[in-house]
Picture 1 (cartoon, one colour):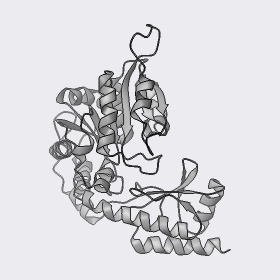
Picture 2 (cartoon, rainbow, N blue to C red; picture 1 turned 90 degrees about the horizontal axis):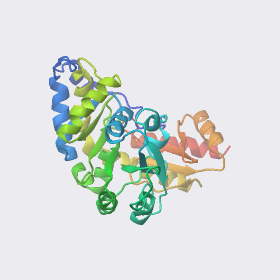
Picture 3 (cartoon, helix red, strand yellow; picture 1 turned 120 degrees about the vertical axis):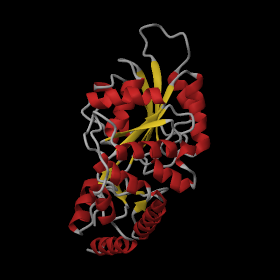
Picture 4 (cartoon, one colour; picture 1 turned 45 degrees about the vertical axis):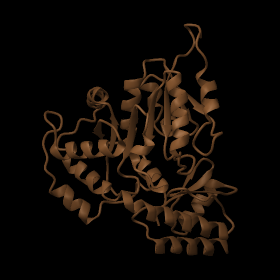
Length: 336
């Protein structure tokens, strides 16, 4: 029972058939027609003029930060953001930015506008002070348990950033989940952002692929950066075809959120300190995370550590009946 991540899903027969029959071309020399279709469709859904396919979300974020930042610029991001913890320091090492985390004092995964304003600071700093030029947001926020930032709070943070002259990048690896949870189109969650990334493997079943979206000028610069990072693939339409099928399944994500609630409720009934999930990530507090993860594995339930808790992530390859079976195994293990 693999609940370590919603990236463990495997492409089903429908997706494999789409990949096998995809129309392709050399996407470095020309434009692969299937990649182009995906980019245009994703840009429209995200409310951006243009989009660029990338092999991974990490590359999508790195491209955005590399375009936005000059070497030595400071950028701000909520504590635990993926660009801070899970991308091997590439924001500093390759994009040249100086990261600074912001506390979650407005709710899980997001700072208060006043906190952001204070972190940016006022004008008139000496020339040798750090120059803050970029705000990175994340929706949903993985480390905060798939927490959703609603549009009004997003708008308040964007307003503060804009007044201070900052650019804004939105890590929307799970933006499809946020939109589904709020009952809104994804474009409603990107308003005012300069760029946004989005992933097709987070419970949607695609084996690989993300996009980074923004203005036409940004995408032209991003394409060069993607090539520099080794992300210029040839007949990539084989992969983009899977992403197109994944986009057709965004409306299915509500079922994953219901499975997560089912799991959290069951864990709470068994005495676990399980947070009520907003999307498909369940965080459960335990006395010893390493021992809990090891015990779960011995019961045939795979989970992982996150933010000092045990993380379970529901996805399309685990049914509601599987969730019940996982709870049965945990109940049996607890009784031993």
